[in-house]
Length: 100
Image 1 (tube, rainbow, N blue to C red):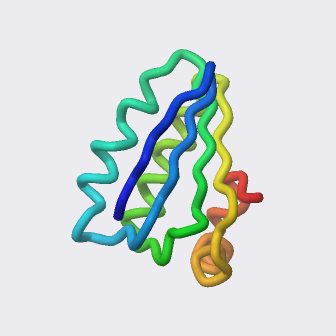
Image 2 (image 1 turned 180 degrees about the vertical axis):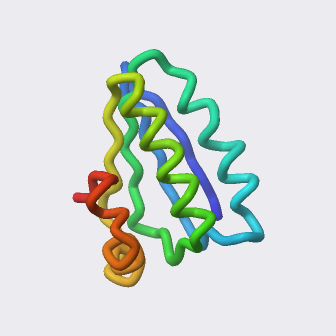
Image 3 (image 1 turned 135 degrees about the vertical axis):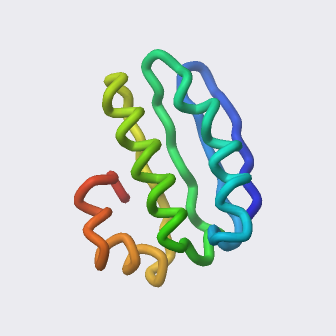
């Protein structure tokens, strides 16, 4: 998985490319950990090129969502492919994490 993080003013944009699975979940966690340090995080994930997420990936998104919410921030996942969104829907994560 390739993770590209850019900041514009107070907003953080994250572009995800590839598969999020057990082989790269630890690196993804390292990539997103700094996003949890902002006082009032505002994070937008572009999932246009995200092909897959495993349960470990879901866990990391949930961890980030909980941290962002506890700090009064906002997190959204955008442009998710149908097969990836189905994983979020089936597991109930689409009720917890904002997906547009």
